[in-house]
Structure formats: structure tokens, C-alpha cells
Image (cartoon, rainbow, N blue to C red; front, side, top):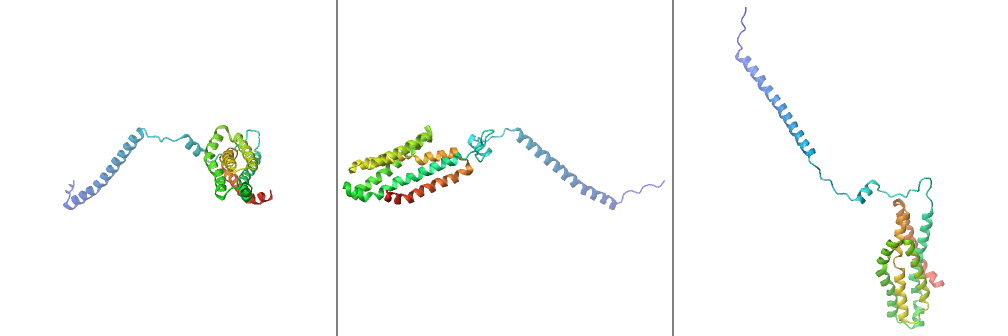
Length: 232
């Protein structure tokens, strides 16, 4: 039989080269496998640890769950237009608010001549209303938040009607000053309570439009105050 010839030096070199070329391939695969195993272990340990849950307030949860507040009618009923009737009354109230606070400036020359009040004193009379209005605006608004604007707004309307009539009965500087101060105190809180009414009666998608109507009505009252005061 023919004996197999011993491997030559060139053949042994080729097999050694192929072995050395295959060895890094297996090493890289093993490194990749060990890397994946280590990463899986890290993920397993991370999942086993309790995560810190952020504290979210109830208001935040409600705002995320329902970003827009909608007024839905009860089952079997349809939405009505009553809220627009309420807005019409509020617009009228807002217009009268500016009419009764501006119309006195039209009567200043007559008041000064009949009561003998100087320009410095009549300015104090005009400022007394603003001071009282600014002082009692927040307390009366808070009061409306406690007992409801349905009870506060009629009392405000009664107060300004009473003190408007009482202004014509004043016969001196001090009486006029006190009446105007009480006038501002009685009229304060109207706009905070109207804002509360809008928040209750109108959904978010309609509230800005309702507020626009209300502010426009107040500016209309400011415009017509002087002609109405001159006519009266």
C-alpha cells in the first residue's frame, strides 16, 4: 500500500493560517454572547428593583385625562340656551357698572357750583370711590366664592342703585365723600362673581368667547355713559 506522505511545511503553514483565521471569529462570537448575557443580567436586575413613582396630584390627573371640561346634559335631555340668557344679564350688569361710575364726572361742574366744593375736594370725592372699590374687591369676591354669586350679585345691584339715588340727596362735601366711598364698597366684587358664573355655566371651549362679550359690554357702557348722563 502507498503510504501517505507526511505533510509538507507549506501545507502545515496553510492549516495553521486557517486555524489562526478561525480562532478570532469564534472569539468575537463568544465576546458578543458574553456581552448580551451581561446586558440581559443588568436588565433583569433593573426590572427587579422597585421604581420610584412620581407623585401626581389629582388635579393633574384630571387635566391629563380630560383636558377640556364639557357640560354634558343628563341622560334623555338636551342642552339648552339658558347660559346665553345668563350671559345677556351679565353683559347688562357690566355695562351699567361703568355707566354709574362714570356719569358723576358729567355732573361735577353742577355739583361744585351748587354745593360750593373746590376742585381739590371734588377730586377727593372721585378718588374715594376708587379706594373703596380696590379695598373690597377681593373680600367680596371671596364672599361670593363662599355663599355663591347668585346671592352676591343681586346685593351688589341693590347697593349701587341705592347709593346712586343717595348721591343726589347729599348737601355737602362730607356727605358726598362718605356716599361715594360706600358706593365703591357696595359695587366691589361684581367682576370676580361674574367670572365665577361664567366658569360654572360655560365649558372651556366657550368661556373665552363669553368673557369677550362681557368685556365688550363694559366698554360699551363706558362709551355711552357720557351721552346718557348728559341726557339725564
